[in-house]
Length: 273
Ligand code: ATR
Image (cartoon, rainbow, N blue to C red; front, side, top):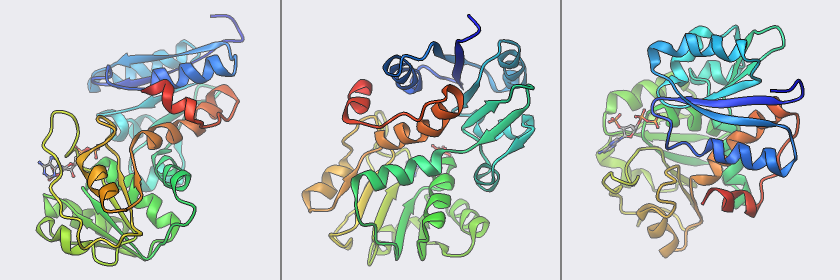
């Protein structure tokens, strides 16, 4: 590595599925930045060692994916308010003095993806399916956007109740069995569960109570066109796939590590397909 080269990586277990190396290396090439972005497969018990190794090798930082986003918090020297309130960091910036600063760009990625598809977002009511790590970031984004009612439904109800309590304010939990009734008057429906992902069962939901203006977003991106998005498009709802969230969450990270704010274009998506 020369003095001008910058390096970053994604740390996961497993990590082979991650599209982040392809995305960041595409931008590095596009902006002619000397540097590289790698994939590190690291077991949870070795995360602290890996962070030290990054410091030693003068990395600018890293992304974290499953199962490290929550675990990394205890290793950080500082974090931003969003990471603190979500309880997870997806991006680490290694400062010149070696201190680790954690941020969470998933909330930003989610909302920018929606904005890139819809010029007007009505903000009375959002329905979020699921209550895992992705749901936490999305609920945070919806609160930052000022949604007045955020209804959470999860198969394991105690988790959606806990999430609604954690964020409080506009958040309420509704039983999973009532998810179709929750769609009444909704402006936005988001699937954050793993249902619909390649190898999993599809999400079973009848959209007939959902207003036609409501945006339907699936954070699943493999496949890109889920049954949920197909059903939404077929009845005239705007549909937003999950690839954009992955791309937009990477924008602030790339800028922090490599010094250029990358533009998201049609070609960016194409580079990942
Ligand atoms: P992530 O961090 O990506 O959100 P996660 O924390 O494993 O992943 O969350 C997966 C979500 O998909 C959870 O809300 C999970 O519901 P449970 O909390 O009940 O496990 C949901 N999910 C997974 N399989 C499901 C299924 N067959 N039916 C309904 N929900 C399911």
